[in-house]
Length: 342
Image (cartoon, rainbow, N blue to C red; front, top):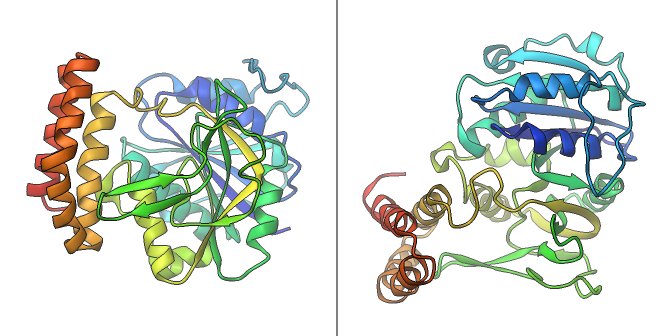
């Protein structure tokens, strides 16, 4: 089976991360690496992850029972500088079983989703030479068959560049969060098929679309050599849309695989969808994405935002939610999206 390097970004979220890891080490795929990139956490995330690997912290989850049988897990801890330079003892690393080893990269700062993942991706491609990169949010839990199902589809067609699973809400495990999306450029929005629906088999067909959700993306290594990496100017949000857009422009297919399943604690790392952080970056980066790729649609979207959306958002943030910080950061996002250069 093709080698897959799995990259998980952690920032002050060790409890989510070790639950994700425990689910990963149960998968039935035989050839993978697990790389945790700590994005300059300010808590004791690194220590807690190492304690989990040593078998000192048990993971409680409604999706599985904790297993002590693959502990201890050997942690290969490396600095950001060593990761960038490709300094790594691969011969020692390869002596361990796939479910008893972990690479832990310690970044000096928080470089966002784009910057943090880029460090992990470049390290994996240069040192481990996988056929695929799997980007996986730390606040997810995976089904044991998810990876083999995605790889099987990806291998079926050389034009397939990016593959994604069926994603359920973590707290509503039969309700769909994401399948695949279609971009509506003039609105600067995406149509998310199946989002919020109870799964009754209505989205059980392999489907091609415009965007794979960034919480779980399987990407062929050739995609990076052809289109480059994540655009770090986005920091977080819309960077995976940007990458998918560039992949599709280069004639790669983006495919949703319904037999691959994961569960996601939506927006856990950013404080939720009404947090000022989330609202600012989603608003700013939407405008930056349109400026970068289609100036005509940027101008149309600006009119749409000013004459329609702004009133709707004002009603939500000030009247319904009564939360001025969200309102302020929405306007900050608009201004920076228009006035600042991406």
